[in-house]
Length: 402
Image (cartoon, rainbow, N blue to C red; front, side, top):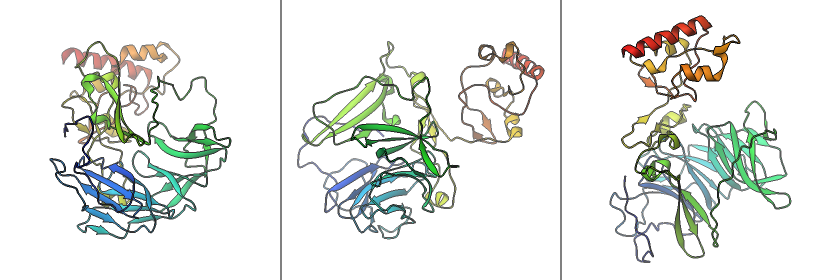
């Protein structure tokens, strides 16, 4: 979906969404519907709005869904990352509700799940990659990992030297990132090890030679921002090598300022695959009913290349299924094993790189598509070094006749 944006001063008579009777505290776009937004307010309600295809002509005052179970002002809302029609809300009554919007009624008064484990105000909440867990920060200085279907607390932080305010799951590593303040009111960010085998959540204090964080050039403004929104990756201008786009809300000047980050490249107007990995698509992986019944699924991924298709990941665990992937239709995905190698020349990483294809590709198996590994060498059943050499010779012969 493409929108035409107009810069400059917006007329005070411009049509807008104005159905709340008190101040709006949070707004979130539906990740699977670019025309649907959810908002929460001090009027103790959560409302879901459906924006017309051609935009607003008049003020919109009637939401498509009205969620009325909270007894206090609602501060936070969050859409489920993989399942359609699931919304999370948190209010000043310290309760977190899970709402199912897959219903014909417009006024919903009963949430499908109630999380009542916090004794003080929830400051921030977020889902993990597949939506099976949520992490929250609270005014009592604790971080909690919660199973949202049951409300059971799986982990809880024990650190009092870091007052976490915002929290985020790091999808590519098994960690949490929090920002907050120290006991001396110094600004901090912290990494937390996410090991569900341990009840207490511990900060990552392991010393490494390389840092987890790399500082990039900063952008400074005289006016501070009240909030920042992030454009999804699928909305970026890939022809201009744009990798991030933020929208700063400057409350003092009533200003919404876009900030764009672009990678300098000599050749413009061309898709650069090295800076654009697969990203979350606007297609749900599950329905609300499937998630409520206990199913979990990683997000549907898509390529940012113009004309690219959505790719649904499929985790293959059976060795027999992996071996069935090796046929003449997928010559670039020869699956080999390196776990039983002896210490010889073939054990070096340079030898592997010279004798395997370096680009990770998608292989088909049982009608699905599997997620590409970081390396082009896939691990299957045990093989001997002699079998490895034979497989490489077979692959070279097949490629030469392809």
